[in-house]
Length: 122
Image 1: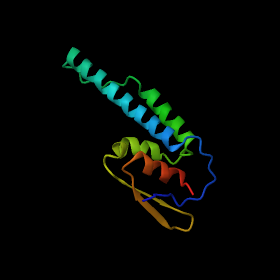
Image 2: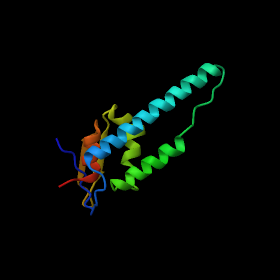
Image 3: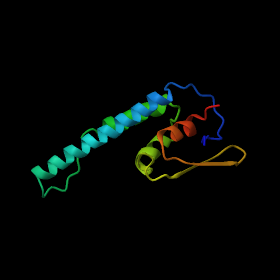
Image 4: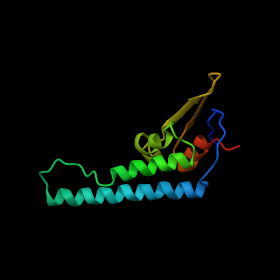
């Protein structure tokens, strides 16, 4: 099933699906490394309630750059997919409306579906 976004827009695709999937995988790996660091810090200081924020600015900038590359600036579907939908693990429903009020929805459970939904390939 191809998920498409009904909002008509001229787009310039700067990343192929394969490149986009690789970029998202790299981001997931970075999160895992960040989690490992946080676990080490918990061992070193078990009474600490601090959260490891190392790399958070990099992550945010990386996501903004990816958003720009797939023409998602302002729509924030990438942030939604990564944080709210937990990289598709929650299989949440994405819903958009075009200028006439027609609704389009799609369960986004993979990077491919996100890519198709955001880019609206013809």
